[in-house]
Image (cartoon, rainbow, N blue to C red; front, side):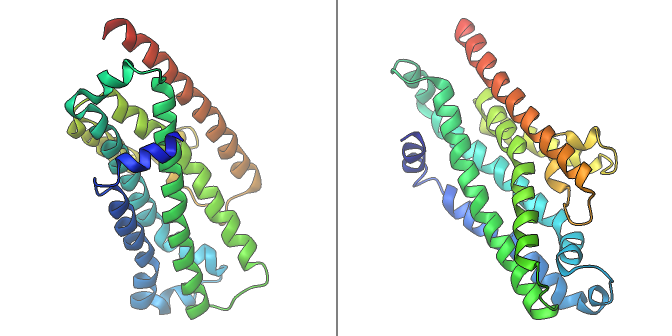
Length: 240
């Protein structure tokens, strides 16, 4: 029910249009790149998915993270506008349930744009490469992995948006986190665990042990961020 109410509240905000446009824009990246530089990529002795992900995922992941940040800011902006959050506190509704409703809606929208991007990679593979026997398994594993790595970023983005009443402060904080993530070395495991840096990781070509380490890190970070939200709500109630 919370997810349904959240979607109703966002109907006239441009939220869904942002995700549709951003998802299409991210999906265009591999097709445009292959159209311009296909000869260079076709010479690589790697699997089609590995070639396409290595060549395009950094830009696509940037779009994904920015969409998550903008979506989070839009969702909480309508709550803080006209003191709606104050009214919510007077209702028999837990603030944490509002928070998780927004997280779930953002997760659903993330699945939507990841499906668009997976479709684009599939079309590029059909057009420029030969389809291997395990192609469908590989593309499902790769984009399922990218979805998991995006979860801590989603929760942290919604948390930041819930902290600041001013949407521009939340948006600015998110953008700063993104640019900080782009400056962190991707080969340093501990630094790459920063929630805004994890979505830049690529499963293709990664060792199974390292893949498992990131999955464990996602679980731990999601639990820690969820606990942080609970603590923050309780502390805010003491002062507001």
